Length: 168
Image (cartoon, rainbow, N blue to C red; front, side, top):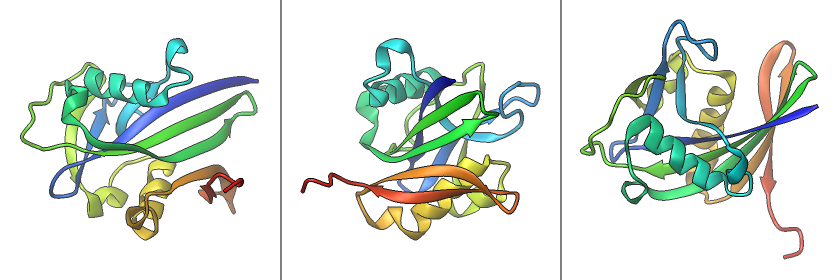
């Protein structure tokens, strides 16, 4: 079984809008969806998902690392895809000002989405579950949560647990 690792970020503006990438309708991966900024972790980044996240931010938005504030790992999500691949996704949250100039990438167009509007947009099940958890719990804590994606009566859901050091 293959392991695929990804790093994505929810970049929040001063007015709590989130920067998304609007995928092109002819893309093979999440065509037409709004997705968080991010992508696959390269081989040399395997032990440093935050570096992969910063690389993806610059590639997809043009934003340099010094413009991102409070970049922190908040979620790790596991899922299995067609019994062939284990997907491990590191989800970061950070802050960025809307006054910064953004570039367009060949992957799609950038869009600021009001935080409260995300669940009404064309987003993935993973994004929905992360946003719901962040609204209910994650926003008020600095904890990191681990989630396992599964089907509950045919609907995708994530079962969350707190990632903590048991030796404390």
